Image 1 (cartoon, one colour):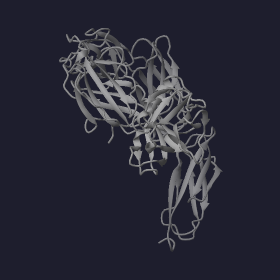
Image 2: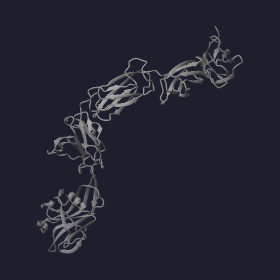
Image 3: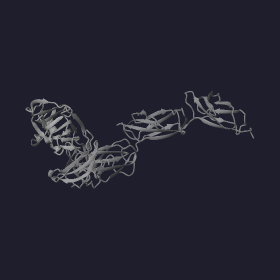
Length: 595
């Protein structure tokens, strides 16, 4: 189940402040440390000033033993180095000891006590360290003398670390009522301390409500049950539980909360307010993340106000530069900015206006709720133009559209070029007359996708330029000219279409079919002015270049190598290196010669 959207199985329910609530602990993922003893010793009432160490024969004795008619009362001490677990939160700790001997298996094996003691350095019966914290009754595992005992040492270990201790000593002993009774005697070995450490989850960040990021001011939302979310992370990537808590800002005693469990660490956790809220009432909420052992800090507070009433009327749009018009000639021109005013039309909580115009869009904030705004917009084309404007309230709700239509004057320049028809490589001269005032120059572009070429304007706004087409794809050259206005903007383009001859040569071939095996004589006629050479290729067999004759022609003889259709491709090149279009000629060769 993806817990980015959590409103179903993971909900523990909504609970009013002051009522009972249990947040189920998620699965644990703590870091475990297995600590072995750094010192083991025991004390004996029969040797009250001796510090005794266990050996393979004695292990760690607890209780009363009768040896050679003398009673020995014993307690055993184990010490652990805490350097590996200090500085991190203790999730749990367990002290474990293996049973080695039990005098009477019918006696309560769980009566052995474990105490946290003061620092023990070679303790004796007479110098026993203080017994500070008693561990809870142990859990007994397996059968007598083959089992073990385990004490919950969590509280005692946390206390020792809080006290600044770098090592910890525990004593294993019997209660005073059993200490002197040999029937309760027992011994232990393989004592260890298993410590689980766990960092608390991180404080939730990047809070949002209703899809809007929280900040110092209340957020307005457009629904009575908005989503609320925040990023939930954990150093150990534990499975987490998350509590969301909210209340009317003016009534903090009316807190409610909602719990989620089974949340994956490392992303956004989101849920919805489970009940409808009251419109125009300010609420505050925050969230806290927990794992199986620790709870993180409460996040920062986030305040919001539900507002589900959108602006009911469209804004009003006006402009003296571009007034409402449905026919030309219109006002302004392409590239000429105009001032427009948007007003809220009596809606008091309008905080901004959105607009769509000439394949552009934008948004402008109102200086205060309900206030008008003024901005400049620049048409990119002449003719009928539509401007759509919407007002927005604090919750981001949009009004109906204001449809403002006006006419932009055609301010494209007037362009004439000559000659109308010419070959590629032959210059054309163009003159330009401005279509509006404030023209500082022009740019022209040949055909499609070529770069703009700037042309300065004369003091009267006119200009002239010369260009030479070097190629043509469709037998025409398209010239686009736009005026550059005094603020750097451009007018609509004026287009002139000129006829441009590619100058492809003509080719004379014998009438079909040509006799099989006979050579073929072909005459080529140059058409491009100043053509110097023919470059031809016979039936894909490689190019050859020959000079153009004084009469503008050249004749070649070719030898078809079979029957069927054969092709000649030929173009000319003039003295400047300009190539003509390529002409294609076809020769048909019969199987048995002419018929």
